[in-house]
Image (cartoon, rainbow, N blue to C red; front, side, top):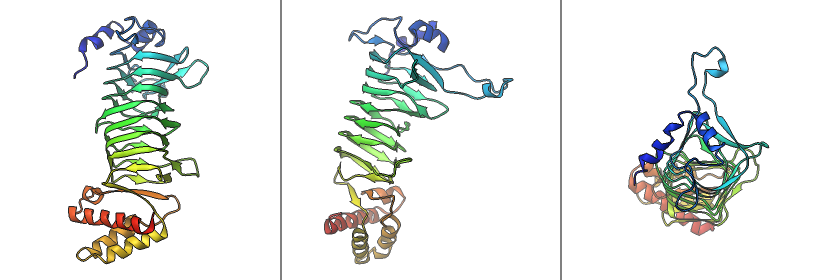
Amino acid sequence: MAFPRKLKQRWEVYPTLKDVLKATDNLSVSPFGKTEEGLTDFRGIQLVPPKHNPNARKLEDRFPKVEKIICKEDFKNADFSGSLWFDIKLERADGENVTLENVRFAGSKFDGYYSHWFATVIGGNFDNCVFKGFSFFDLKDCQFTNIKKSSRLDLNTGLVENCLFEGYIYKGMFYTTLKNCKIVGTLYDCRFAVTSSEEPIKYENVDATEANFVICSVWHHDFSELKTSPNTCVVKLTDAFFEAALSLAKAHPTMAEALEKEVKMWLKPHSTKPYDIVDIDNLTALKAPEELSKAYYEVVVKAKEITKA
């Protein structure tokens, strides 16, 4: 369902970001009052900084920059559905991160020239949103539904707890802990890694029984509590598991050489890769024959059963 155009057009009387922030007292009130549900009505708001001037006299004015909106306090119970956030960061007057609670962003777009952090969100509805260059601090009780392939979901700090992720997550970045979350759909070419901690990031009680993880790269993650679908297998990359997989590959009646090559390429133990996640379509996504991809997946599953990896 398309977002009502009239809800965006009503903001045209505030043509600049400065005008919008003045009319809303830095997003603390709305000139349009409340929605029928009693939420502060920011639906259709367009938060876009002034265009940069590549010919400006000052070098610093020639390039785009992230615009900080200084909020008086954390805020809750607001509806930002159909909004646009372009190179915007929220910050409190005391310099702390802003927390948004019970906020709707359905059909909104989060975009910008630079990747940067946005806010902590509790009870946020992100249905059918587009994300490019935006990261969040902590996320709790949030719903990310109808995620489109055009989005670039970036979770690289804080804690993500009691959240739902549903849709097609393409090249997503997962650099933080997920706890009591559910993932539904396809994760394609996503990266699970860590940048600062020496301890692996642990996923706690994460339900991915309705998800496929296709050619996702995993580094320094503990997936021992990740519940997966029948087409996806989490394995602990031990020496025993590798040897079992290699033995099974060599014993295959028709594809031994090809399977041995894949096992050696993907399943060797590594100090920064305690776990890996293998999908039945991994090799197919890499242009390998479907029969080889299925046979490789069967090798992984059997080796896990043999070694309890």
